[in-house]
Length: 600
Ligand code: SER
Image (tube, rainbow, N blue to C red; front, side, top):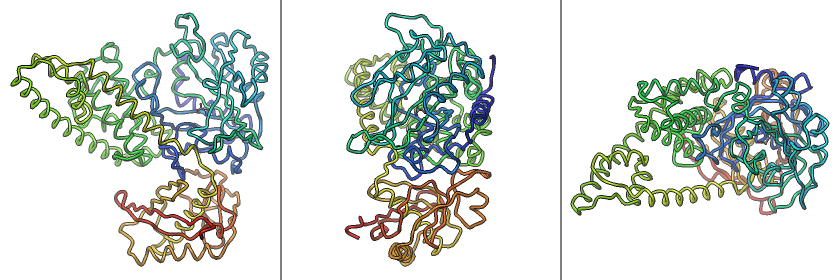
């Protein structure tokens, strides 16, 4: 099927599963809500974690969506023909409803009948079994029955065919992956999952039958789920016979815009520039959506990732000779034109996107200018000492502190008749990458959606805080973000000025009074319209026409939310506000803790 658009694929996928009893749900934001264990939403299943662990979903037991995702684990691979940091994931879910047979059969039908992919180009992998879970003969038999020949069904171990948990704890299970044969030459030992580029993974069916606990135990879920994820960008590239993913209609316009920004001095097809074009396009696309979803460039957490993406893009933009500025914001306009229809938040946040990108670009350009002065000093020092080689450590300092890409240092050195110790530079870069990777892994130690009793209680405390703030400060207070770890809650809300000490104490008193009332926490499933008419607060994600859960806490709070929550407010210990901060114009942040019930 030639030239299907990204928009077509999103639509056909969702219609296909709607015809099989699924309900569409909207994409969640890139910044996870109520979940401090990961910086960004990395897969479609991420916002659904509470339901995969047993919460009731208001839209039922069969769901389908297109989720925006960001992964930076493979950031160094970006620049090849298929890796991306930002991507869209098509997903269908069974929450304790259908299982392997329906899931694999529908995947096969969608690919071969709806998308008309030649079955001879498909191969699959299934879990080989180990001490934790048995070999997945059932999936293999289903694939055989569908017509995949035995030699194209590969049994692979956990490293390949087990999904999750994200981090140390959460839902997980064996999976079955579907690969597409790109037609590149085979080599000895080549098989799906080998990474040489012959086999492209396009769809993953996860049979989520387990939960890994924080202690590392694998517990069987009372209700097994299916979580599937298809990489939209790669799949559309495959269907359209593109050589690389940057030719799809949500990326090609970015490459064209970049070529124009170089004054057509560099062409994407010129092999010496291809990688740089790809990195700039990918990173600015990712940063644009991240900013729209609230990850403003900064030195911490998600904001730091946004900053790194932008700065990396600028470095490669310099390599492409883009001197026009600010170019990131110009490229973001193109991102809006290709993704704006699917993600309305982009248009809503257009001004913030443009101003944050322009600000970050001018900050980083100033750093590069300082780097140039640093380079001049270095050059003078070398000349004075009669040396002709820039040490690896000095080149690395220019890179790390001043953002100089190695080619820029090499170019300056060449003009000045100097050499650069590239070998040592490479070693230092490797060491640095290993350290950053370790840092990122640390971040994930908590695991996806920690559902300990303490985080559940803190989630209930967040609703109480929200209601109390509105009583004290007025109904213009809106939730802007929420982040919970087992130790504390963090709540962002709109309010133009700092709270006085008396206001803070009054908020605290109201929350504690509600805790001592020991009111029960319960929910109703309503349409969003009914929920709002009934006075429930609804600020996030939900679309009109959708069924939502409305959590009520006595007469104190009514809010649209997925849960989970404590059953009674008395389960929360004493509530204390630890700190208030300002996080942006008109946005304030409160950090608070509750005593564990035995202390409380
Ligand atoms: N969670 C699985 C993945 O990300 C399937 O959606 O691949």
